[in-house]
Amino acid sequence: MDLSRRQFLQGAAAGAIAAPAAAFGAAATLPKRTLGRTGIEASIVGFGSGSRFLMYEREDKALEALSLALDLGITYIDTAHSYGDGKSEERIGRILPERRNQVVVATKLSARTADAARRQIELSLKRLRTDRLDVLHIHALAGPEDLAAIEKPDGILKALYEARDQKVTRAIGITCHAAPEALKLALERHDFDCTQMALNAAMARMADAKGGMKATPMARGGFEELALPVAVRKRMGVIAMKVFAQDQIVAAAPIEKLLGYALSLPVSLASLGMPKPEFIARNTELARTFTPMSAEDRRRLTDSIALERKAALASFFSDHLDA
Image (tube, rainbow, N blue to C red; front, side):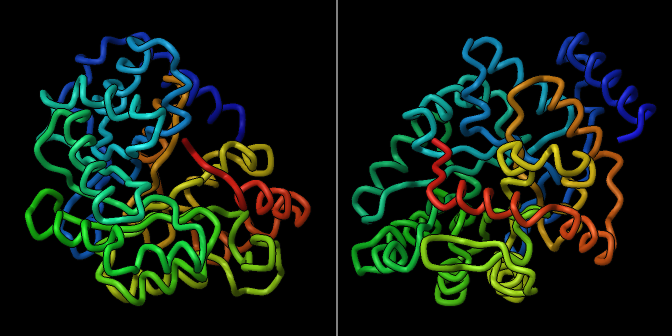
């Protein structure tokens, strides 16, 4: 990032932090996209409420950060039943009722049986202080054996279909960190409305292998090559996650290019963890000024990241759990 750009973003961040959140009001808007065939519209960046949100140790600071994100135009909140043993959903629930009609709320279930999933849905609704969800995901598909458990007659899929039929949620989906082949199969076999997968410049052209994903120069094998085309073909909403790879690739490429890479794919939005208010200001400004990257520019960015770094990233995500 050149000096003038860095200074601009630092200035924007400082202004956002100093100003009262209410000062932004409804005037702050971000570009929006439709979440696939659902018809749901959301800002092209979402507020990730996993481990990065839980890094705000003080409750008041966490709520200030979330409020700032919404005031700056973010309309998509991503959380999960398991994040912080419920703390993430509880925090969101403290401000959600007054802003419910302004935001899209997505949560994820770690259960694998229908009965357990129904209990988790009930508890998530209670924590979030709402009577409905917009997106309900199966959390963190781990591989073929996990997919088999999900697909059992009494598996979680049954509960998700019920929740959608009963209008407890508008859309259902599935997320995956490191098993692109399993996600591809899941998307092909089942009636999901959306999906969330790890998409970043370092994970492009990475393949499934024994023991986890590995870096490969072949243009095949990763989420971008396997699962993403299925989602696009079936008109699913696609949420990109791990855009910065838990900050493990921010030293390898400029932040704006990493975010630009993900948003230039056929995705609805990128869900970002933002553990500091200045990150919220920076990322919303980047979203506001986003221009698509060409396929060639994306390839050059991917190729500029060393295979050793990609291999380390693959190892990290092979057993990563954002809890």
